[in-house]
Length: 141
Image (tube, rainbow, N blue to C red):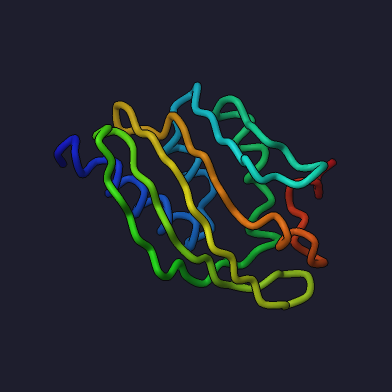
């Protein structure tokens, strides 16, 4: 795997892990000091998670609330920085609690170093978490 394609391949693998609901393996793709940011996070949701442990805690309950079926319309754009990609995609599935459809578009800016994710800025639609059953980030609190 060349350095130029490493972020693309790692990201595609991360999507496969999310579809498989293997959150442990997904978190394993992160550097210890990785940062996950949500610039559009609604009130009460974290805007930034510092470190692999915080990211793991945040994602732990995800599959219990959101059952992802596919990522479609995935477009990965390489940038002038060979370690950074910009991703456009759509996540489709259902909310576990209500069986309501889940259909969200994302834009992510992801940086990989030494084969691990060090930075992930996730620009997702915060209105989706207003639906009953979507509030996985506060479920354990």
